[in-house]
Length: 281
Length: 281
Image (cartoon, rainbow over all chains, first blue to last red; front, side, top):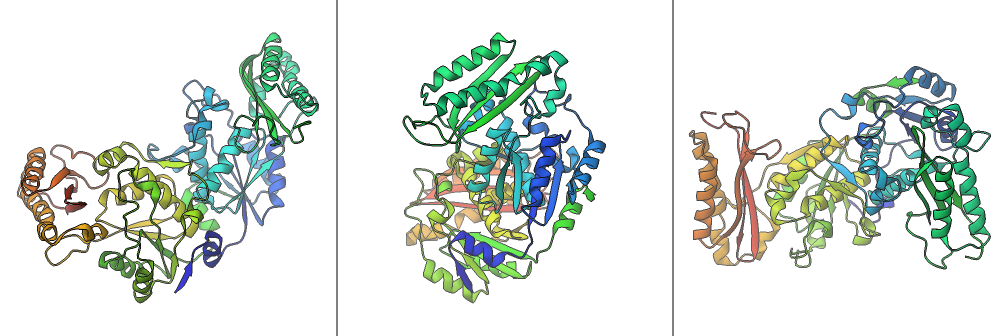
């Protein structure tokens, strides 16, 4: 009889499979998703994508019914991107009965985006765990545009001992800097022209911090004010630690990220920018 | 590119492994555990056992520190029972950092045993999910003695789409009917002689229901009173549906179980009895 104590050793003893890389999506695919599919190829032998609009992560006032479903076009894009397997479950496949068991993330689930979307990250964590259990990949990719989601899923995966490497994919942007998003399709032409301001202001915040600014609360307040003066309704602008999105330590040298969510016309847009080398910190 | 919608079909497409059967324990093994190991052999090629006293499922007033640790004797028993692999993690292996992500079971986690052990089933569900993620078995066995635990884990496994068959093992009893339990070791000789009353009374409840009794509340009250007259302090006696431990439907024909927990001296003993063919129902 073998006896193992460290988890990696036990895993090694039981392992028999090749390497599957997984990219979960809600469909309505754009170049940002396709960049994830292409990146996935470098991380394994078999690339699996999924398309599922997950009711569990939408609040009652969210856009679940409105959310665009474009399966036929999505399939063509995935095939062209060299994806090997698509998992496209129905609601009955994934939720054959009301979901009663959930993954409960810690308090960060109710902060930043979670403050404005109660239950959202619980719904994301629960459906991604189910998808992981079904696909059983060795690696999974999520875009950095949904930065808080990436952080929650990375920490969930580590804390629940899932044998899955979580990889963040860089945000893909239009030429004017707007982060690609399914929700950009809700914007009028005038709103679309205004939308790049969000990323421009985050770059200003980043530049200020790299130049030595340490009054993050003032930067956050001024950025939100600037957006709102141009017709936005800002939910938050926040400078946080990358690893767990907690408030930065005073005088610490930790890697930072500035995150924002703001509503422009019918669309709620989110964006962020990593600040890897804050000056004077 | 393949496209799959039903989960079983997707799983088939991705499956490459043999069959591992897993029996998680907290150690201090008795004949009840060994019966699970022997039964496991019939369900797969490789039998994996684990021993881990899980702090997360003990309340502040529970017996975590007192809980018996007997790893050397346990290893000998497992080897003799033909177990192939033992996973015996340290606390640092399984909880290298404070656990922040939990499996949250539904309301039943705060009823029956859960009413007297706040957080217990959340702790059980979370550690078993982690063990499942580490061992990645095709089947897992749990004793029916911890009936509510078996029900929570079976429903968690189904609801989180884990590709694991959950198998309940029959309770092993001493000649006088007492269910084997690590906690029986806390009993004095006099208490040990009194202890079989719990199972005897559950058999009387079962006989009454099979004979047509439908006033479950009266049976529960009388059984608890009978125990307490003999020096027990009863937490609950409850007649419930087997599938989800909810209150039985009036006039329904569902399979029932009677469960009880009662404190005798220093030990909190639990037991139950399935009632598969209630008369007149």
